[in-house]
Length: 362
Image (cartoon, rainbow, N blue to C red; front, side, top):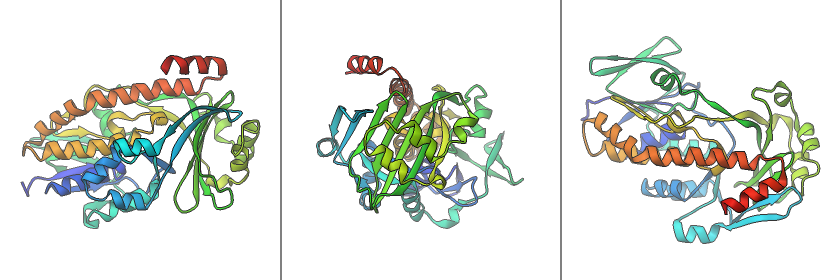
């Protein structure tokens, strides 16, 4: 087994967690990342009990906890600040394991990287195509180089070129709303409540992080790739959300333009297949989801553990890949579809219709 070469495309949460999980099973894998350095994309990140259980099984949940913050509760509000529903995260954590845990993506990436031998992580390696050659998979990179590997794990995100080559119809779909995010200083604001507000002019989420930082996001209905939305600054967002309850206007008043991250919200409609002989798709490359359930990273972390478990059972990894697909596809399809529906509900601009839909869901 020592001579079998396993390669992972993508150095995000999916790829790094998978490499760690495989390492613990005695299976070495090299990680190939497109960026010049393995760095996080995004801002704050929520990890639910399912993801935290995986990190507990991998033996470093306490280290993850030390880098983040557990919220005691989560509130869903209307734009005037009236509570629509509120969950007790502490009670859920006692019953199911640590839940509603918030961490900066950078902190999690740094921790995951520390668990791997630096000589197994390669940067500036953006995969552009693959070809099958006898019992090998040849992967071409944008820099003109290539690798030959026995088995290929593809975890390079929603825009994965290899997934598109395998399934040309698997193109991202636009949700109908666009999003701004930021991580900012919370030492003066002292916000402790995690919340999400649904209103007529969009949705606003608040998540206090460790080290006196605050993560927030704002979603507004808009055409895809709207230049007007892309040009919006903090003052424009403040004007849009000025009638929303405190502390939303105050948060925006304390945010600087350079802290903004903007992108349209997209996912992939369930693709029906993850395993392709010597190639398997994981994470967002397999089942990218909208962020409405907070399960994107969590499902990638689940993937890592299940895939390593299946690969530890047989030295025929193509068989392991098929078993992984069988264990994961129904669950991830449910997450993608449910999150898509929840996003449509959350972005309703008619408040009364929104409440009626909530009653139906409840």
